[in-house]
Image 1 (cartoon, rainbow, N blue to C red):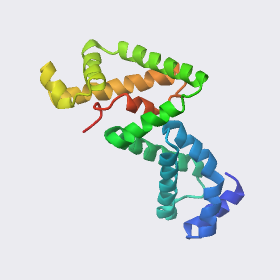
Image 2: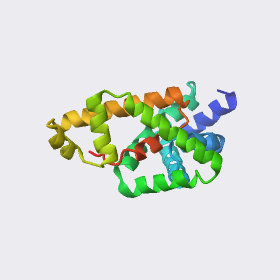
Image 3: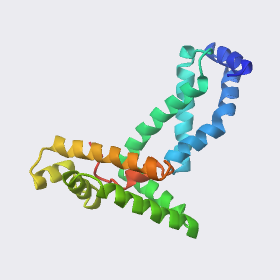
Image 4: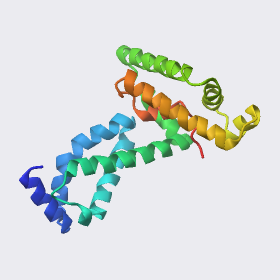
Length: 199
């Protein structure tokens, strides 16, 4: 951390709005790109960024200028993004918007090829799940059934269905991170799971 940033953070802790604006301008571009990596909707990414900085202002007195501010800022951003992804996955309108945005970004031939590669990776990831977990996943994802419906059909508890879906999501995300370099926005995976992660 530079001495200039340490000074700015010290002023920010005291409630200096000019210091806050300077910090905002310094991190805006990199944070926006980071959020957009996970959330494919520019407006939602922008809103998330504003909420992160609003949070920074709220907790400014807790900031320690002697510690890594960038690490602290990215940790707050990551946590906020994951909460937003959960919200997107559980909200029909937001999920539809995310899907449309993904397809809008696949207008050119090269992007469409990449999208097909991602779809193939998803199929491979699902095929590696244990049989019962794979069945639960497909019922939730492909047939958009609720936990209760899947539980009734398979003769297992709702909590067991939920556990299968949580573990399936972890396995799929792990697979993507190792086979696609983590480049597929997590919101895309969420879009494949319309009923799976509803409460």
